[in-house]
Image 1 (cartoon, rainbow, N blue to C red):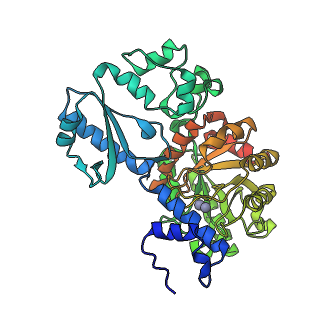
Image 2 (cartoon, rainbow, N blue to C red):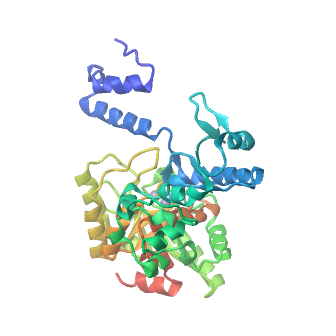
Image 3 (cartoon, helix red, strand yellow):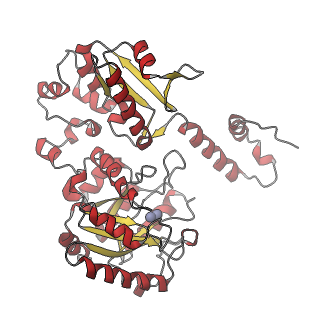
Length: 433
Ligand SMILES: [Zn+2]
Ligand SMILES: [Zn+2]
């Protein structure tokens, strides 16, 4: 018997009608997993990573400003709010739509949507005096807008709206929460910024699956003006990623010692490992090897299909290991590619608090894991958040910027950001467990 399924939609239909279970090799569980994967796939259509839309948006903006200097153009929407996933480029202007389309060379898709460099473009055209208000309304969450109340007048500047409401000027990426949870001017000023980042943590080299050598990575991070660098290649169970055997670990440690000698007190390389969290929640390597690292980052890379209870206890067991100092990418999600395993984030954050473990905000634009919505709870529990590039090449250390963007959405104060510690402060922090 053949299924006669040609499209993804038909496959979803077949799952919903329990057709798959009639076939050899398919049980209810497999059918449900396939159904969930299809729904995730369909839901991801028409969505893009913020990081990939950003450059296209800037290019379009520059073209529009060049061809119509008499008009005003500004980006708004999810992109301006620095959402991790966006629907395309949203452009607000006082120019009429048709001339913009013609002069900027926008194309129309068969469905009639505007396209620039393969990305959907949405143009909101309003009279000039309405632009600040429109920009405001189009750059905030529903919760935030409802709390602010109606904005009925026109203003010459978006910040006038805050002034009139007796509020500090809240940056667009922070306009996510009810006003009661927003910090005052001083709190907004101390939200983490890229310039606060002093240490680059969670990086890979050619010892495992990185593109550049340990020395190249360290020199590059030093040249970029940072104070310290944490190398954390993959551990031995991550065979697919060239995880380090114990003898490789020792070899790396002596190379790090040599590098640190040559850097003197100008810069410091810390010995770390991204230790796999094994299926039962234990870490890779015997305890005496783990104890030799300056810090251990513990992450899940295998057996990602788990229910919430199992995933949560697996993570908590790893957090409780005395060598663990950072919990890496807590859910394992890849935005628009796979959902993370479900975890009880409060229990995980509580365990981090009880064990002096920092929680990672993995800044790779495809991860941005932990989710920024968990940051207020982490801060409430005094858990440090570590904004890490998970760099597999020199240039990708700059992913940190994406992490900072979403950390600000979660209202992360620089004092709660592990990477804002100076090298000396970081050494002190390492001694606290
Ligand atoms: Zn990892
Ligand atoms: Zn990694």
